Amino acid sequence: MERTLILIKPDAVQRGLAGEVLSRFERKGLKIVGMKMMKLTSKILKEHYSHIADKPFFPGIAAFMQSSPVIAVCIEGLDSVDTVRRLCGVTLSREAQVGTIRGDFAMSIQTNIVHASDSKKSAKEEVKRFFDSKELFKYGSVLSTNIYSSDELKK
Image 1 (cartoon, rainbow, N blue to C red):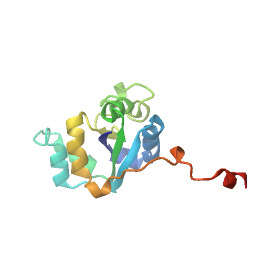
Image 2 (image 1 turned 135 degrees about the vertical axis):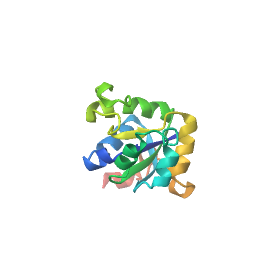
Image 3 (image 1 turned 90 degrees about the vertical axis):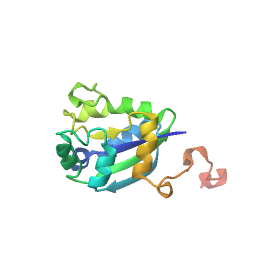
Image 4 (image 1 turned 120 degrees about the vertical axis):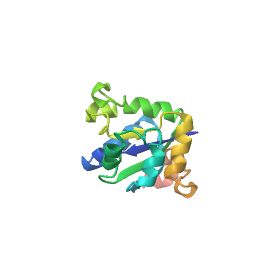
């Protein structure tokens, strides 16, 4: 099963939207297999944004991403990378379709609620960057197991 990384960004945390964002992925049928709230260090930001770390606008992005904790989430599911990207909407939020996370909650390219891995390759790298193997879980669904006998249900 494919895994991908989501970062619930400071603007979503500050606005109290983390639960709403997470519920969109769960309602789609994706599974949360790892999650933690964390303050991003300069080191992890430089690694995560290495493709733009030398750009003049990077310090502003780093300051924003360190303005409050983020919630790192590892999502698992069929075609999870592409599915998550569609649920998030385009990066420039004011152009994102209504019904997507960014289209419903954001207007900016920077304060756009959520980061999502952009490819299977980057998803693997990003999940490893934010989670060690002990922080990722495998579990079934209570909906697919019969935890009650029929006699217990009659009581």
